Image 1 (cartoon, rainbow, N blue to C red):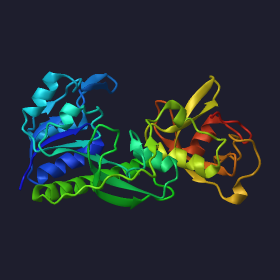
Image 2 (image 1 turned 180 degrees about the vertical axis):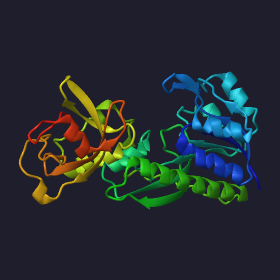
Image 3 (image 1 turned 45 degrees about the horizontal axis):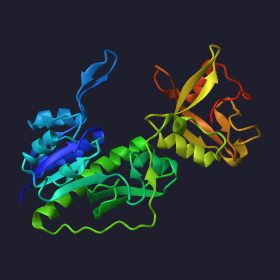
Image 4 (image 1 turned 120 degrees about the vertical axis):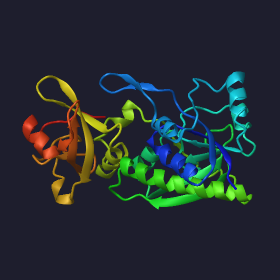
Length: 316
């Protein structure tokens, strides 16, 4: 049995789920997404990835600035939806919206709840050095990602997996999981289990302070910080290339082998091929990017920047 669905999502991560729901034959009666925002060199307003896909499918698109007005709630109720599917929408749903669909609102969340509730679960899982994560389908309630969970799919996080790679994998896996959840829902067989009280962690939004490389951490933690923020927003350090301190984004590193660590205070460049001292051990810079420039091999950048062993790279 097909369902009447309101889809609510904004970024690339949500696109495969919308596509899968349409492909499964459900009737997506409305799509809610964030309003077009200025982007690119000309700062022209650009619709969100979900907005563009919804337009392609001919689905009516709504971009309200707020859902907290009675007018917004009335419009939402007018869709007559069986269920709302929410994937990285970017706005808090008030109770009137949560109560509007007959069956409620299902959320696809990129973590193994209750670990990493909140805004940045993919980045935080990698930055913490987690060995696994996954996607979960839960029924939404007023609390932050506190609702009961119906279905979960786990994946391993490799020691060098980046946030970008994990994002792409989980977006596809999550689309399949939500499609299976809706199929079970249409049969009346989707069961929910309350989240346990133990193991709750919060994935706070990434800040500028999170992105500045902390050379005072052990090498493994620095490596996790870099890959957890690659490719966006990108971990960074500062270096003086002759015109004052400049931010250098780091997109890839390797944990240096024991005989490569050498001696030096955290943040000291130990070799011409990009080995940098940490509090314990060292990391090798693999790929870096200057502001406004293309990414490049770190050894090539170091050669051009004329940074010699012994130079200090700025960071937390």
